[in-house]
Image 1: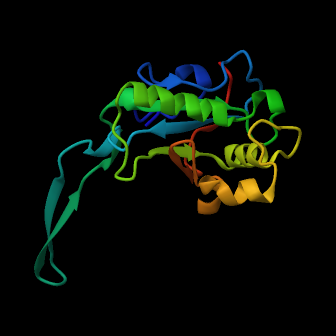
Image 2 (image 1 turned 180 degrees about the vertical axis):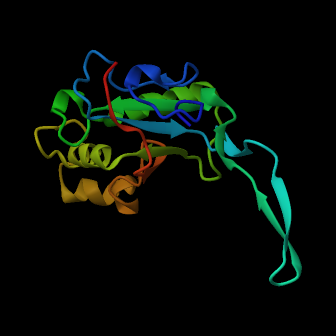
Length: 190
């Protein structure tokens, strides 16, 4: 859904022209361990068929029967690409300067709200993140590894924080976070 085509992304610079990157720029990212997350409205994509179904008929002489085989190529496609935002970051081994940040996801959500992009029935957008980005966001929320912005200071604050009660990174800043191993990773910076 990030490239807008069947072609797999190879680098951060080739995200679809209609999908804006709210994460790190090419200049900050280095190497080939970069990852892309996406924040989107539920109405950004939909189930689509690439072509109409093909039906083939053949006779099976062993069973004296006529058999039919149908195929269809389907999947998900961009319907409203302006309702999709990308967040580029370094992978698991990335330094703090290239790691994922809640600020990037909050920026994506603010941009979606500015477009009046519809939310789900409970008022949330969806954010698909990689395992590396989940680790980086968890560190930020916990104040681990030198990342202190957004850290939770005391158990009393943790009890009051609904995002942590739902699951550490499952609901925060107006989005439901879903970890996926099917997001573009291992991308070059440019």
